[in-house]
Every structure is written in structure tokens, then in C-alpha cells.
Length: 138
Image (tube, rainbow, N blue to C red; front, top):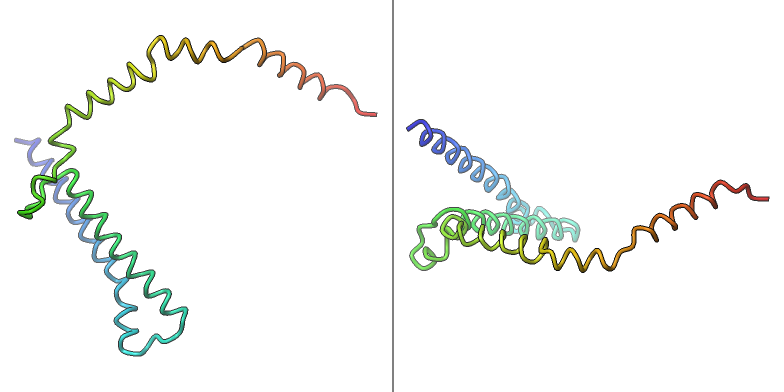
């Protein structure tokens, strides 16, 4: 029961933060409204207005995309394409484990990487560099 209360508080605070970010980004639409009224007529203001509009639309799209990855979005046409990470958690984790164990840290891969490197060559190069630094130039 206590765990559910903590989760509800966390989810509620995440929603509030997302709403605050969305409204803060929606201020990017203000310059375009001012431009339509004729207050902002210079080229710099037009570029600034378009940039802020693009940032606002991009922020809204990012907000929706992250929400769709972790939560179910109650829109009829896209409902089955949301909640992706939570629904496929075991498959994602097993894929990561397989990649690390069999592709990155398998004995054959480690053996191949070690066969291409030579520790003695690195030591000799380091010693030759340190010898050239110690010799005084005339």
C-alpha cells in the first residue's frame, strides 16, 4: 500500500513537470501572434518567431513520444503502439544481456581483440618517447 502511494506521487509530480515544460515551451508561440498583429516586422524577429515555434512543436512532440514509450496513451488509433518499454521489458533486457554476453564479451571476441594488440609494442613506444624527451636539444 505504501509503495502505491509513492508511485502515485512520483507519477503525479512527473505529470506536473511535463505540463510545466509544455506550457513554458508554448510561450514560443507568442512572437508569432505578435507578428500577425504587425508588431514584429523585421527579419530578425521573423527568424526568432519561427525558431520559437519550431522549438514549441518539437517540445510537444518529444513530450508525447516519451509519454508513449513509458505509458499507455488513451487515443484509439495509436493505443496499441504505446507503453512500449513497460510491455516489452523482459524482451529488451534479454536482448541487452545477449548482446553483452555473446557479442561484446564472448571469449572469441576478446581473443580476437587481444591478438591485434601488442603490449610490448606499447611499452617500447612509450620508452622511446620518454627517452627522446630526456635528451637535451643542442
